[in-house]
Length: 292
Image (cartoon, rainbow, N blue to C red; front, side):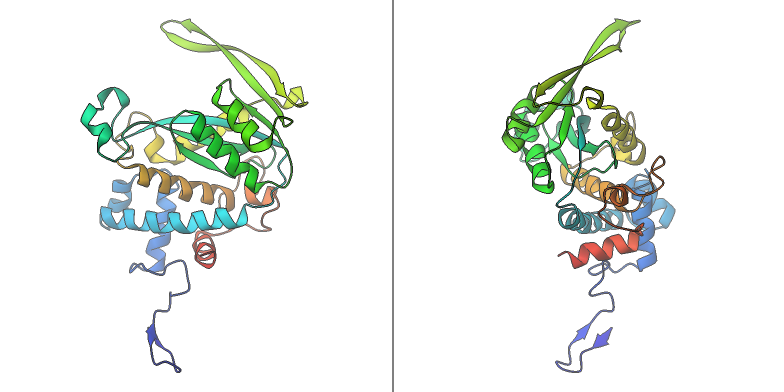
C-alpha cells in the first residue's frame, strides 16, 4: 500500500495494473490464466494451484473483461483479405433433448448453443465471435461486428447455412465478394461422412481458389483442444452461458496476442500488423486495464 502526499489517501501498488481488484499474488493469477487457456478445467486448475473453485471463476471473469477490452480496442482498422466463417456446437447446462419446458423460461440460457467464428486465412487472426443460436440474428451480429473492425472489403467464405446470406448483405452490402462451400455427405457404416465439397460464388467476384473453410474448421479443432468446456464427452461443459462467453474472450485474446502460431512462427496479431512483438499474459492483462 502507498499513501498519496497530496490527499493523504491510500492506494494499492497494483491499482493501475491488470491485477487490480484481486487479492491473489500476481504470479498465482498468471498461473490460473495460463491453465485456463491450455485446456485445463476449472476444478483441475483449482486442485493444481491449491485455490478455491470460486477463486478460479473470479479470476477468469476478471481476465475476460480485460481481454475483451484489448480486442475491442486493438482489433480495429484491420486489413484482412480472405475471411472464413463457421459455427461450433456446444451446450450450456445440459443437452437440448434433456431440457425441461420450465427450464426454458427461467431467464437463464440452457441447452444447445452455437459459437460463431471468423478466421482470417492469411494471418489466422480471429477478430470476432458471437455466442447464441444458429439463426439469422447471430449471423447478422457477427458480420456487423466484423465489418466495424475492417478498413477494407474482404472476400468471405461460409458453409451453406442460409442465415449468412442476410447477415453478410446487411453488414457489407450486396456487392461483397462472397462464396459458399457446399459440402456433400453420405451415410457409411451408420455415420455421415464428407464425400465432396463444391465452391459456389454468391455475390461479387470471389476468387474460386480462396472459397474454402479449411482454416475456420481447423480453428474449431483448436477451440475444442484448448477450451475444456468445448471438449466433447467430458464433464467440463459450461453451466452458465456467462462463463462460456468469458472463457471465449480469454482464449481468443490469448490466441491472438500471446500464443505463437505453429505455421506462422509468430502470433496472429503480429501477422495481421496489430502488434510488433509477442505479448505475455501479464502484458495482456495490463493492456486490458489501460483500455478501460
